[in-house]
Image (tube, rainbow, N blue to C red; front, top):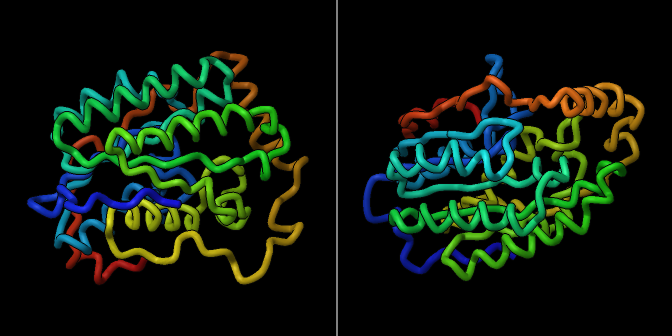
Amino acid sequence: MPAPAPESFPILAGPVRYAALGDSSTEGMCDPDGNGGWIGWSQRLAEHLATAHGEVQWANLAVRGLTSREVLTTQLPEAVALRPTVATVFAGMNDLLRFVRPVDEVLDDLSVMHRTLLATGATVATLTLPDLSELISLVRPLRARVQALNDGIRSFADDGVVVVDIAAYDVSTDPRLWADDRLHANAAGHRRIADALADGLGLPAGDWGAQFDAPPGPEDFGDDREWNRTHLLPWLGRRLRGHASGDGLTARHPDWTTIRAADLDATPA
């Protein structure tokens, strides 16, 4: 279950400044904005915060393809300099997929980021990782590593981090919440993640853990051969060349962007 929000939530006392750190999930991939970019759960969470507080300053430092160590070294200093009152940290999947580092080292990176941000007075929130082996049979060897990472993430609640345990809900692996690549949430999935974090932070949110009215059908899981051709082979090609999907890319919103509740009223969800 999601960790309960603190009894006295710090962001209620003043202006809200929300900074997001992470990789492609936080960047918002596969949640298109209709203009060639992404919306993503980070922006959707910022909209929750704006709705609750009138407006929010939001920065998204995330860049796809980064490992937890790369998020720590490139994004944490920028986040600290922004002095956020709220921060989300979500990284580690790229480390697991590449088998490049032990889970304990990934957890150490996450812990450094959490503790550093908490020391600035920010409220820090994070998520567990859904078991994507139910969607991608080839990643089943990762299941034990994902479970170990999630166990470590859950323990961060003892440090004062708001931990939203999305992986504990069956709906987290429903294929109707995932894009064709089966690694990134689609628009509906990003909305659920934003709702889950909003709920964890004590904000009004929908029933994000609810199951669909009907179970998924075979057609919802897509075609394995097509997935191999359009997603697996290009990924393997990048890995063999020593490249990552984020090479040469920078954060979409590295500086504060103001999101106002009044503007959201006229904007379709």
